[in-house]
Length: 329
Image (cartoon, rainbow, N blue to C red):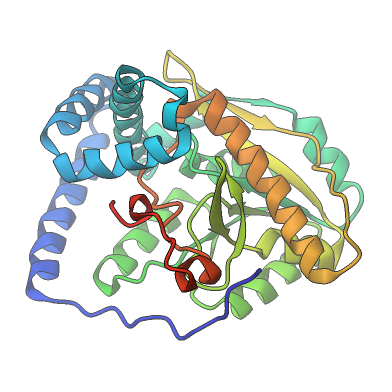
């Protein structure tokens, strides 16, 4: 059942936020400056070292990641396997962050584009021939911020839908960096505005890309994700039912040599229930199941920082049966 919508909280900025923002902007400015002088290939060893050190020195981060891993895999994986997954995923997260910033520089952007090989391009082209546009869905796999850059470089009219940054200090900075990367974003500051914009893009037979593996605090649909109810955006389902556009999974995966493979799968198939609410839930479940398949197959490639199961169903809260594990991290 979809959650009731309510007014979002207003973000307030305090002194600590200004101090943290100052040092963050200083780091970003220095890093982006050095990427003009140093190719990204020389930064991978440094990213690996930072990731390994960070995995040891950040107990709060470790608690959150292992909390997610425990909820996902439970007794399927041994403790040493979970710790190894935590360390390797942390290294990959740092590499992804470095690549996101390095892509602002033209030379590094050119190299990163050349390092991405596409599999399944024919699936996307076949769906575009239907003239209804394409709803591309993906998750926080690999260096996902490069997907739009690569697709634009390949000549596709590709638009990434991104969650609007609520922090007013960071919003302008990160949106400016995204513009410099050369890929258009649609920000979901209001669901209605984003929905209308994506409808217009699909009517022009273009591609929208939605990240569908985040916790949806408001207005989500609860579907099964690793055997736990997870509040998930109904956006792809609503767009598919409204337009008939194909829903195509697109995932970017890192290879051992730090090259990338962009996988474009065939369109997903759905079993329609005959009523709107049931269809929305069914489509959202199929998309979420595809995300889970990739997480199980490539667990070190997924970004485990998202509090994926934090929002709980209202009936679970009413009965007082919310597992403390969902609130612990």
